[in-house]
Each structure stands twice: as structure tokens, then as C-alpha cells.
Image (cartoon, rainbow over all chains, first blue to last red; front, side, top):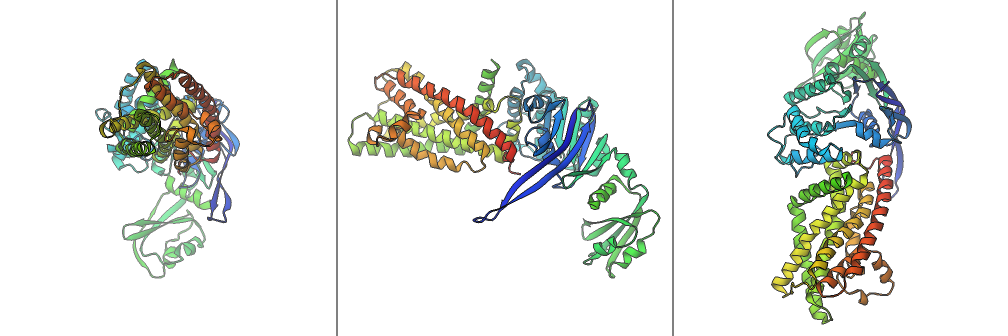
Length: 322
Length: 256
């Protein structure tokens, strides 16, 4: 049985512009999202900013009511049986917000332990276990306002696990963390998966999804554009090649010109210090390096390299197809 | 038992959180002192019947009302800003049991106002602090606080739904002072104010305190305050259910 089911979920927001003559506009944040997550599975929802990841997760954790479609967690409908859903899930949003800043980490956990119905005798030992798990032992009596971003994020994780929920939703948990903090947090997520939790993780870091997830759904503009294991997704571009060209000042219209070359699957530009890198995915049977250089109008070119596609390339290709 | 425990732990948590806000505490003490001074001068100038303690209690209740009003609205707005509102909504207990301790805590913090007002009056305006019936006063005080806290619950439900509902706080502060007899006696108000004052807990709360302080019979007022509190609880419960659902439909729980 699927632990989490999303069936044709839609969510529309109504926004307005103007002061005196208000114009109302409907924005479709999620447009027919469907997926299932099995017991003990770590499922990733991967997509760029504004793709609909957070809106989807908020519908699943009962914070937003879907405009249409249904979703169930452990068989409970997220709208009709919201209370039952809430009892069996834990959730963590990325970022620093969501903590009672004036109170200590311990006070924060103590309060939520009560809200989640942790038996009084279990509260202290459970908080101790979680402080140990997230590495906040010894800092729990300090006010949360003095915590670093990483510490707040770890406090969120502890809060989400207080009632030992079988299903955990993690919305971009490593966003804004330094590399060491992010690595530690990924290790915590991996240990939760090993402990048998069913996890839905949203992220826009490819390597994170690749390293952690059993299955991934790529979401873009409110729709799922691909779903499968990280290997499946890489296979989609496995028969292609990636050419990276370092350029010091990309001339205007270059991306459009490169995209127009025959055999090009996708084009993106990354900023790297003083240079930009044009990343071009091509079919494997074509050699386009000279063609790409020909579109640069004599701009200063640095390093040129060819490599095998990664999950990130698969992701870029999927999003670019849209 | 679980419900009482949840209310108790939630109340302690929010009292602690509010007490650690220097700004909130300072406002709770300084503002009522100014109001109390105005009330004392008005009383002296008006040369009306009554005692200074009568005035002091009214001024103190003004502080409790302000604290409840701004506390309930401000705290929910603040929770929205700091991102804790969503975490508080998506917990298993009914939202009433999450918000009620908060509104009761803000009313409790109002006791700082009452204390500051009485001490200020005693120090600078010779307000006698003898209470005629200490037992009745000891009962009337928490009843008044609970009554106001439950009124705050109804207000809080709108604060959950509307991102800018704290503008309502400014709108409701002074009219409630006037129509509940906190600042000036209700006998000075037009007749139509009467029915409005009867459905507001501060009217009965302040009367209960005044009766207990100056040897009257506070028990009918205490009873009325409790009865109104029960009505507010029922209304607050349904209003919170309604507004919580609306907020989830319209996505107003967070700022993003």
C-alpha cells in the first residue's frame, strides 16, 4: 500500500495588482500532480524555485487545501481526516524561520512535545535522544535567537521527530547551510531512511537528490515532467554528451544561436567568478564544439571540455524541454 | 486531563515568551501608567462620587484590555512573521487548544499593567490599596483575566485569517474602554451603550473587582463574567474552525 498518494492535485492562488483598480489573477502553482510513495521509501521532489514543490508539500501536510484532486497519507485524506494525518507525520521547512526565538531550544521542543501528545514521562528522554541525534546536546538551554542557521535547522529536525512519526516531509532542509552543516544534515536524513521512515524530500540540489533518494520526480511549472530512480533519469540523457565552454563575457543572443544548432538538446549558462560557462547538451552522434565557438562572435574563450551527462544535466534537459 | 495539561503547558510557554519581550513588558507597564494618570486627573477635576481605588481598577483593566488586544493580535502576527503559525496549525490538537493558552497568557501579562497602575496611584495619587473583600477580589481577578482572554480568543480567530487584522487592534482599544465603563462611568454614556456593555466581559470584570474592593457584592458580576466567557469560548471555537479552514483555502497562514 502506498504511504503517500497524490492524485491529480491542483492548487490555484488568487493574487491582485493595483491599488484603486484591483485586477485579480489566478496563478496555477500546481497543475495535476500525481505520485505515490511506498513504505520506507525516500522520494525526492526536484524542481527549480517556483516549480510547485512547497505548495505540493503544504497540501500533503494539511496546511493548504487543494483546489482540486485528492491526497492521502497512510490512507487518511488530507482534507477530511486532517487530524489523523497530522498525528502520523513530521515536517521540516528549510530556513531559519519557524522557531520561538526568545525561548531556548529545549523550551521549543518541550512545547511541541506536548502539542504532539508525547506521554509526559517520555518527553525528557525523547528530547535528550533527539538533541543527541541532531547534535544540539549542551546548547539546548540557550535562547534560539543565538543559534546559527544550521542549529535552527537541526532544531527543526528534532521538532519534526518528537512523536516518532512514520512519515516525514522535508522541504529543502539544507537550504542556506554551509557545506559541513549540509553534509551532516544529509547524514541525518539518510539515517532516518535507514530507520524505516517514509520520507518526501524536496530539493533543488541535484547531488542531494542523487545521493539520498530512492526515486525522484522532477517538477516544473506545477507539473511532474519525469519520474524514476536517479539512474533512470540519468539514462534519459545517457546517450548524449555535454560540452562546457568557458567564456569571458557571453555576447548577446548566444544562447539562442547555440540552441538553433542541429543536435543541441539544451543550453544553460552558469556564472563562475569572472567567467561564464555555457553548458550545452548535445546528441552523442554530433560534434558541435566548433559550431558552438562559431556562435561566440570572437568573445574571449577559456577552457573547453566534454564530459558524460550527470543527473543535473538530465534535470536541466527536462526543465528546458518545458 | 490531557486538555488541561495542554492548556497549562501552553500558557506557561507563552507567558514566558511574552515576559522575555522587553518591548511588550515595557509597553504593558508604561502605557497604563499614562492612562491611569489621565484617569486620576479626570476624576479629581470632575469631583464625582466614588473612590480613587475605583478609578485605579478601571485604569488597570484598561491596561489588561490593551495587553489582550495587542497581545492576541500582535502575537499571531508575530507568529506569522517568525514562521511558527504554520507549525502551530498543523499539529493534531484542535486549533482552539493552541490559541487559547496564548490569549490567556496575553491577558495574564496584563496583570503587570494592573499592578503598575495600582502602585503608581499609591505612590503619586494617594490611592488607598485596602481591599474590602480580599477573597472575592482574589476570585474576581483571575475571572476577569480569563473573561478578557476568552474575548481575545474571538479576536485571535480573525487575526489568523487576515494578515493585516492587527489594524483592528487600534480600532477596538478606545471604544471598549468607553463602552465598558473602564475610563468613565457608564451612567455618563447614552442609553444605547448599555446593551453593548452587557455583552463585553470587561464591563463585568471591572465591576466585580470594584465591588470586591469597596465592600459591595461582586458575585453576580463574577457569574456574568464567567457566563460570557463560556459563550466566547463556544463562539471562539467555531470562529477558529471557520477561519482556520479559510486560511488554508486562501493560503494566508504564511507570508510566502
